Image 1 (cartoon, rainbow, N blue to C red):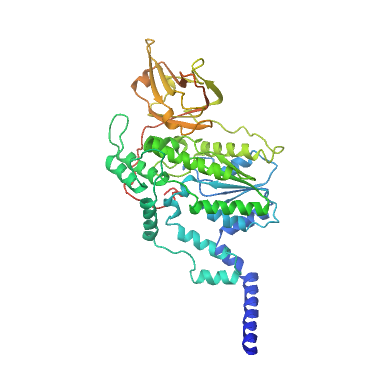
Image 2 (spheres, helix red, strand yellow):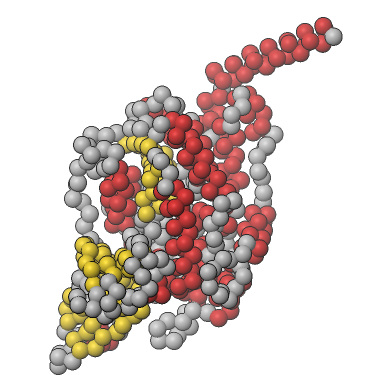
Length: 496
């Protein structure tokens, strides 16, 4: 027995020595090779950063012809020139990746505030069971809470989730087929797969009643990507919960940066039912995390117009420069609460041609029925523009109001015509700010009108508030061919 204990002791001592040798001379090299996300944490420490921005490719993707390639995090740092701000960007990353990144920022670092990207799509089965997951999970093995040598053995023996593309696709399909869709009203379909299949069968038709193949497939992509309910047992929710606990342990301010999705196109293609799910999932995240001490959620969901999304043939959070600046500006207003003395407005948020933003809040009712209005002349509408996206925020106190969005056109003879669109169907809550968005065609009467006005009106005794009328002109529909396929399992975050 004594000899056995002696041998066990010798083995343990040898393992300790081997672990020490490996940790001192080989571990860092392996980390750089197999788990390069940890290098981001080292850079943050070496640069003595006080604010850290964690994100996926939304942070560093730019358009092909853009001269300015700056990241969202870099635009944000312009507002705080005296505060060192770094970023930890990992393409295709998500909450689990961010958690491991943050774990390897030493508690003794100069970090004070952590900004973590939150993608609505990342809670859905297409991203959770993406084909990129095997590679991502391999990166995490060396970062587990075991001795470095043990982690190296686990990596060597591939002790992580390994699945083929077909197996990941099958998991995504299973959840799209079996996870029930929950609406507070009667809905035609029980699950995401049935909804998507019906869309493919029925097709998508433009305002002239013409079938559009490309937009039909795009509608399917949006249903696949956003047609789900976030619940407490969602894997991403558990990952974000872990980030909350880690930041509490470290004493860091935590900001979840809920990114803008292309709600203009989502509403145009998927209609009020898809918008309902997107808004309810947004509200779930705002309630769950926005109510926690030490946690702030920045809601950017509806802030970026369709024309500012780079990828028009797939669902991503990749923005042109104006979109990146809008996200940065909104995020900076929240960070200002932590660094009021360091805040500086660089006054760099300029609207692109064809984009109009009327800031401010107005109360409208029967006595004062009209909101702020955008007035244009026909000669300001370019010939290559075929659609106008309109968005605004609305706060109604009850269900008795009757908000209508109006497109008023005055012709050369002084005759006035008004196209009216119901707003109420898009508003899912009262007593709080919500948003509405419209994608409307630029028809012949629009182009020949002498004057055009866009506004909201409310001829009811129940007052509503309207703020931030956002109008953006764009080409009509997709010109490039969208690859027709009934199912695609990628994280979308890399512009697939």
